[in-house]
Image (cartoon, rainbow, N blue to C red; front, side, top):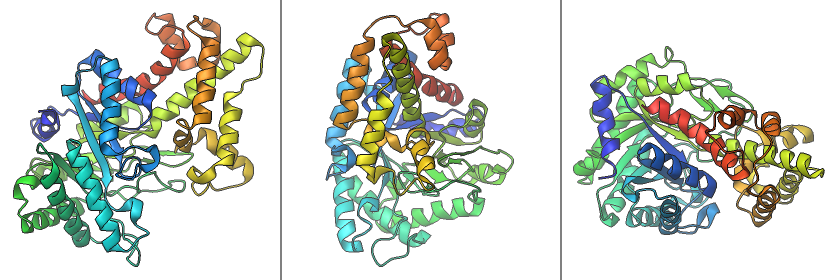
Length: 419
């Protein structure tokens, strides 16, 4: 069973042999391809997750339903010769967030339909997140309302799933899409709050006759003190999270799921896994690396062809023309917003890479560079992180290889941390 690894994480932690799993939260085809290629080479399972905003019965911002997303990923898996039996698909933040502007009854009709679609499409890992209020309700709901609604969605998932999914509960993280401002200080989840969240969910699951489903709750989302804003990263501090980490001993069969671990150092990622935050979510950090590679390749092409770089200008024009994915997230003066559009840790530019204009510009760049071996000196100048790999023969200095290597570099950091 593909979820056996997830169900084993708690026992491994308690036996003093902690292991982790990287959860790739992205719908970018290049990220998916690099993830599956990396999984094939390492022999490890690949956990790929879609959020309620990315993928739902209405298409989300990717235009894909859950069934279409599964087909999309499996098609790439076949191209990469990845063993599909090692693929785990997850639904992240499944709840009413896309429809929270609607009255609760209407929003939950849509939410139930979405969860049914994820379950019917064979998504094996379901994160139930009903913490946000709908129209006329508080912005954030209390534990009992959140747990009651989560149990209702678990009931729907159980009815529509062909196999038995595993569940993740809890939501002490920003809503899908990330924080809206610079992160200055985080409140780490208290040990008592973690225990109470589990017990309240247990009771509401039991009230709906879902004791068996609750036994498949493998993870609890908590805030261990890691996050990133537009321009800063809050690093993991094991000492500050010591009490929360210790609380795992009173939560049988459950480990912690850490969201927004993007841009943490290798040492911090290893410490998170050691301390029981065994599912490490990463998304923007992968497309951030992709953008760095593409912009670097554009500068290399400009040097080789003696023409001005064009990709960044194309993306700037596109984002100015269609500002809906960044405008409310990037405060400040015009120049600050310009820099953030391209270089923010929040990486809101990731929403634009599958736009026809962006696809055309990237394709043209790849045609310009072709399969030629790029000069090592220009790789050193514009893609410095790739230069050692090129010199050691690990990465051919071609445009395609350098692009995938940028994403793989991040994935390798996570794989090393997970053990």
